[in-house]
Length: 258
Image 1 (tube, helix red, strand yellow):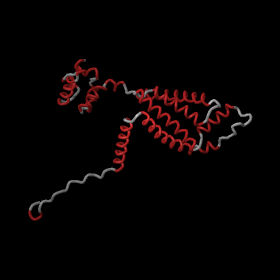
Image 2: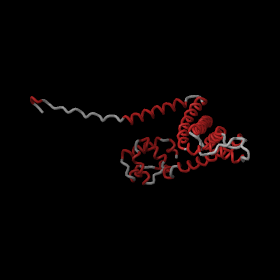
Image 3: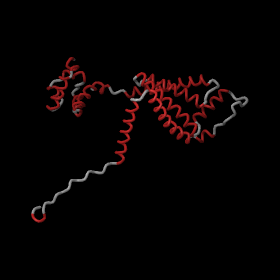
Image 4: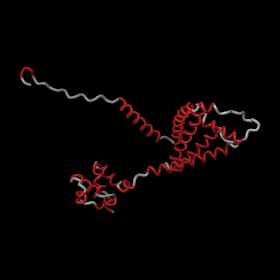
């Protein structure tokens, strides 16, 4: 408006209030990333000790929770004296095993703390030494976890050392089987393997929206050195992205050599 009324100026809309939950989640992720980066720079002994302690604390919490849910079952189990006459050693071993898995909150907290702490500590050391996280390291950690669980829980016969080895081997075999199953289901589809290099190139160029065009035209990683302007035009890629893709291929020594 003009005249005595002057001009009416509209203030810009105020930004929406920040989501406190999202801010908290972002902050937690930043702290976790920073802590992991700091931990990776520490000596092996320091990292293993911290990882073992934190994992043991988590395991103790889970064990206490499970123990509180199974406390009724543990109270129903008989507790004969260790030197009871006529008690079969195998029966005593089975009873101790049942008590180990159906103990109260404190018992289960102890058992889970030992299992998770030992597993995490050995895994950390194996990864530092071998530089890779594979099935062998996972099975070694499971063996130590099973052996320590057997010793701490007191289950088994009079030969605790033999029973610890047996429990460790059982844990290791189970972990190895689970690792193989996880590997099988985590493998990417063959289709993604054929287009892994193409996807990486398009992502680096900011052209990931055209990945479907490559797949529709069967322009896989094997055809990258053979790409021409006409081939890209046939899969409906605009001129600008075509120039960027061709320039990227010409500047890549590996693709040029192929």
